[in-house]
Image (cartoon, helix red, strand yellow):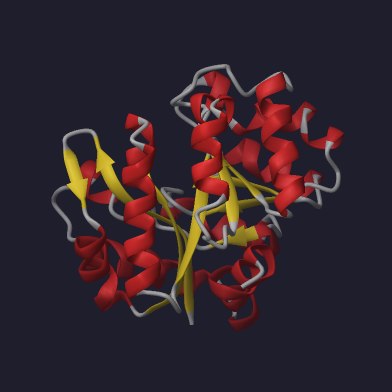
Length: 250
């Protein structure tokens, strides 16, 4: 049973993955459920974002869990926010991306407090991109997490990994996903005893942008096989599905 907590649809730089293309791309991967957000949100084309998610929910109803990716302009526009809140979608997670909006979320800013307020109101976990710059590394959140002990945090990519180990060990309400985590760090999920704080995630189809010489199917299977090699049955089941169902309340 495989549940993927980190999948995308939409526009990513010059590449567009339509909902139809995404469905075909992941069909051979035997994924039972997947949480999906639209990278089209980076263009702030919010109606298109909702159309993409609506297509997936219509055609993959029993498999798709939509992620509400918030941007500063979205939060600050009552009209746009209303579109998302009245979409009829059963949102399973809220997301922010500090690398795309440098330094706007950190230091417990008013914008971040607004995001937390929505997460609490909707009773949803908060997914946060990590890595890429100092201001988006996971350690930035070390002083912020304690202020919100009742909020569940999921740190995408667990980057840098050494910092992620510390955060996941330190806070009971902190989790991480495996999208783009180096496979050489997979054994440390077990040795550092953080496997019970981990969700499987792939970042499909973004892998094709960075790894153009390997198909998504091969990329996915290779990473999955390495995870299986280092994990026992209980550990693997927790990372591949149990934590997914626990956090996304599916």
